[in-house]
Image (cartoon, rainbow, N blue to C red; front, top):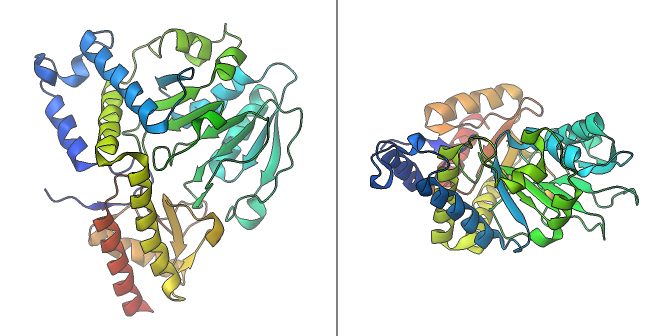
Length: 358
């Protein structure tokens, strides 16, 4: 099979073995005589898939037993609204670390529902760094942060130290890339299309505090209380996406879990950053202390060379390297399923491009 090297920011590369399993499941799933996408979401066959996906996520992340897990639709964009709707009572406000575009969207939704306040904003330096200190509101209901910035290429190496202030995290682009302290958070959500599977599924992890904070009686699709009660089955879920997620989690477990995956991701990122730093031809966007292991952002000496690099790389089978329009330049997304061989191919291409155009 002739597969390109996929550096897309999302939907992103999937493990080839998982793609093959998904293909085999489409015409006749587990000898049921029905294809995977034809199964009832309430059938015992799919229920086993659903429960296995939750169990695997719990094992990998070490989710506390009293936390609840949901697989919903709408992506992080819906969770920007849903978290504020469920967690902010009248006259309450949430604090936000605005580390990029997606974090800012979360702030906007909190302000639409109740109130949101900026605890730190990296706009002045084009989001190339993360905060050293925070100015939090002692009366805030919670602090929201985005663990990894896909557009600008920054990543928190640990969760912010905010004392007793509840933490809410958007982990869409680095969940299951390394071990995390789930118990330090009251709510975690993550769109699947970076590290967990295809688009259309959102993993949500809620502490007892988050479940109790939800007032209930909201629009049923947006109500954590009801969704927890129904196990995310209030409406028909993305059955194909949940199965794909379950298979990706199985692949991570078979690989050795999050410690092994973290080591692999560190090695891939180190290889790319090493090439960026080797000469003056390439310039990284994020300051070294805030660099992401998932999204490596950089640029050539001119916008014209950036464009030429993307075109030549695409022709050479290196796909998805154009930077986001917000920052320009180049971006290589090296999520879990991006193999080290793809990174090695990109490094070799960067060296060849520099020797030609440097």
